[in-house]
View 1 (cartoon, rainbow, N blue to C red):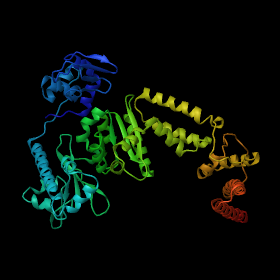
View 2 (cartoon, rainbow, N blue to C red):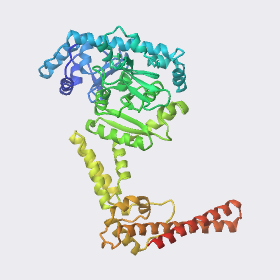
View 3 (cartoon, rainbow, N blue to C red):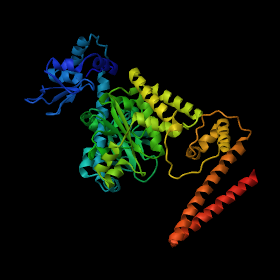
Length: 540
């Protein structure tokens, strides 16, 4: 089939109204945001055929037919892709670009490639249930995979020997090497995947174009993928997309998780719209592919630091694709677990709670900014402003960009610049800081802003605004650091003494071993902190 550059088909979709094209064949009535009519692909009396101009696709809730403006013309008029494109190009007033047909040799090479990977997959599938694959089968069964799941996703086992290179020994060497299944060694060809749990990787036409192999002995890396080939590019391939594509349309979103097993478990337990990148970091190409199916994406990562970093990277990648009909969210799985474990131990409902509690992109970016910058100081706010501006500048939709700027300006005015007027009730009531100490602290922070980062939690607990300009301090960096440490120690002692008084009061009312032990613990802490204070004085 002839292929046109994606930019041309995208321009067709942009220029032509889906509602206009379909309404020429199907009477449509607007209800809410969508248009409805009787499905042209099956007989019905009650309209169940929905057309979304905003999202650019139609869907029949009766027969399940689904597609975009091009697929509608193809199906409705029973024509091929080229004919449909030609008709739509005439309607849009566009000239068809020149295309290059694949040569006969290219077509033959691609078919040979697919034949080899298909046969290799069948070999791996059979070996999973053999004696040599016993440990691999036990592993995947322990991860909660049923025989039905294994069969659907065609999971297999690559043995320790060179099963592929020996099976395909009569295939031309260059054709076998082109699949990435074997490599050239000093003694001939050898298998690229050995002693691995094998996950086939499908293209959008459900053809196997590559494999992802998981180690079974705990060795790193956990996953290795087929090297890039003529038919497979990791940066442009999304694991599970062939299974999830229709669900992404129906659920009106995609969910991105971090690994293949997570994606399969999510797809089989109530979240069929789930996909995963292939062992590599998420790429711009992955986002582009998903956005063509649906611009609503929920990223689901671990709640640890690595997961937060992955989420921030995903946020920066998705910003250029943001539109006013996009809904980008971030969900985090806490407790060092992943979706696979949550589903296995707590069930689908718990996972659904995590997805439903996801944070919008606007709130996520705002929270990250407030977490990483000391917005109680002019310097910290300046850094935070620059960070937000840099992120927002990536948004290509200028109207949306301005709306987000207005939203953040409102938040900054109410939460940053009115910080002194905010009511805040701390968990414990800290003693007031005298005015002289406040001035010294302000002068220290203004002269040594790096100390504000170092002692951010303590300085925030004092509820002091550092906006006021004061005389610069004469203290050098070391003594300025010691001044803050001394103040921390003083505060700790005051709080411990307060706790001690409360315990003594309880002792008078009721003498218990628990209260007595608590008093002893507090006295020991007071002694320890006092020694630190004395040692600090000696240093000074």
